[in-house]
Image (cartoon, rainbow, N blue to C red):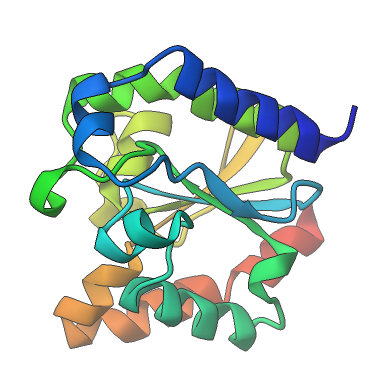
Length: 186
């Protein structure tokens, strides 16, 4: 069975299992993931925003445009990678995902990663880092690759941080530029 078919089945399982029904009820749709299911790099954000909720794809708003610019800087395109979020429904008013919501989706995220089996997992922002690498401070570990069990993780600030804080933009670009060297080492 292809990775895409396995991912499609997993997406259906989230719907069938009625994960976070109160979130699902107020969202337009499930925003599962997008990109190459055979990739070596997976990017994980926190939760869909308004544009993502409407289009059904992660990172399609302003943060997504900046992410695509950074991918181009390292000679990658969106179709070369896979991108998802911890929480697959938009929280109301773009609030942070609640711990219980992150916990509810974690087994499905782990299964997504198992299916794709990436070489490098890039966490975008503190929420996705906290779920996969608990106890770390993003301000201290951003841009540092670390091996945990079978995966290599690269925590990065969320692209939205650069949109709200111009001084973060260069930090994020610099951290992003490390990805090709990290992949070569792996």
